[in-house]
Length: 389
Ligand code: FAD
Ligand code: DHB
Image (cartoon, rainbow, N blue to C red; front, top):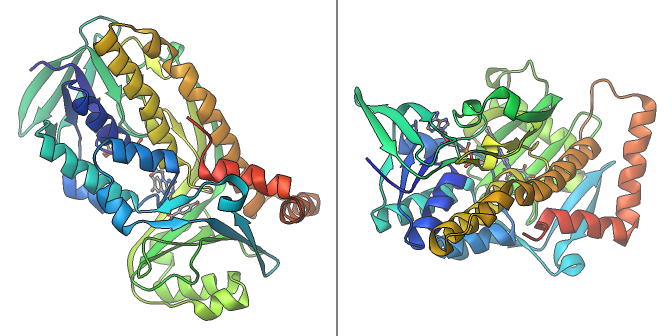
């Protein structure tokens, strides 16, 4: 087989890139190790920046998002039992859209199928070869048979545990990492959310987040210990603990029910530099991870793809590699700012096991300053709605 760009991974990064390239007349083959249903069964991010929404529109996958997505003009932060609103719209003129990653992924898969672009699911043992040459090759196995694709470029969109980043020799890669001493226990339930906007909660018992997927489906998170398991958290215990961390009004509005999904995610900051090795280009979680506080993971994958798709289109349409040369530097400038924001939000809102009385006073002062300063609120809002591409 031969194509122009092999895309490894059918998450938001890979699917979005595929759409933007195919629409520009560039041939792609998308390889994914899991089945379509498995990919669609993963519950992940829920908040899209305007830039990500614009990209989904450009990809021809935005129609349902505009019908069903919820536009949020602000968010609330609760501390000491009191909620404070950050008004994104008034502070920045921008909003965010609540629309599940699962739904965006489904829309992108449908759009790709409508273009008739080739996608190979359950492609096993993907391996990348001759990445430093003009003719990289990608091998995989499917239904017990081995295949090879010759291409010009490989897009490594295969997430944190994928094969792409691991295909770069160690001495050519520099990694930066922080692992946080807690996780997020998430629950999905078919009940209306406690409030019309998200509530981020700093509580002495640990962080909590009230989010949603629609006005009838809620997503809640609790900070938990790293040694805890989903089985340690039957639904009743989850609801009881969540109610204890909420302010009285939110607790009163909380509608509980049987969970339809429950999972624990560890929190990590991670960046691998540079995002290129020969003709392999990394994008999304393959190159970087943020802790979820602030909802930047999916949005960063989208901004990487905005840069990478433009660079590949320039390469094929104008014959210039300048955009591809500049890709790592351009993407990393934005990534590091999102890393800083996610780290700061995490630091400000969670209970750290080792934190001293002094650390807690600092956290309190940080929040107090935020609630009393328009400049501080603007800084939060500007980052939350997304820095410019
Ligand atoms: P992914 O979505 O990870 O997609 C990568 C794809 O590559 C996967 O489908 C994978 O199966 C495939 N793949 C992996 N290895 C191979 C291989 N060897 N060969 C072929 N295919 C391969 N962000 C938020 O903003 N808010 C959240 O609440 C949130 N919750 C999260 C919860 C979890 C458990 C995780 C893991 C992430 C969460 N994120 C969240 C982050 C966000 O979902 C990611 O940033 C986003 O999915 C990144 O998209 P991606 O396309 O780069 O990677
Ligand atoms: C969600 C996740 C986040 O990390 C966040 O900051 C906001 C919302 C969510 O899954 O809904």
